[in-house]
Amino acid sequence: MSSKHRDIPGTIFFDGAMATKGYALNKMCFSFNNAEGREAFKQDEAAYCDKFGLTEVQKEAVLKRDIMTLEREGGSIYYLAKFAGVLGLNVQDVGGIQTGRTTEEFQAYLDSQGRGKNNG
Image 1 (cartoon, rainbow, N blue to C red):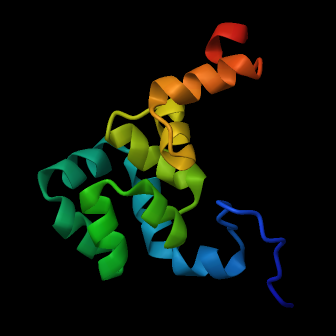
Image 2 (image 1 turned 45 degrees about the vertical axis):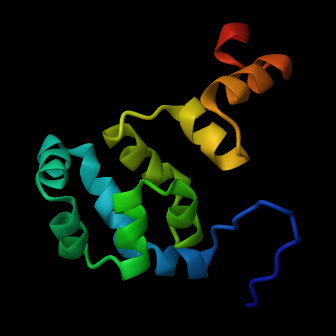
């Protein structure tokens, strides 16, 4: 089965190939569901990445907090949300990163579309 997607600028498709590419990264992010995993990561981030077998590109992106590279390297936004939480980021912060806006600009955009936290 081929993996053909419509060309939607700025869209990173998460399909089977991406799931395979990001398996170790997503497994690491899933480990942040547990306090032990979050604490171990904070103690030695590079070693924690190595423990899960991340690629060098994934590891560098984790250490640089580069969410967009992590998405391009197979990170599922659902698992990356766990990583974002470890960093103290919320959904609006990540939405801003994904759209090239500040958190405030992204929140204002959501509000203008009737989808923000102030329109709930």
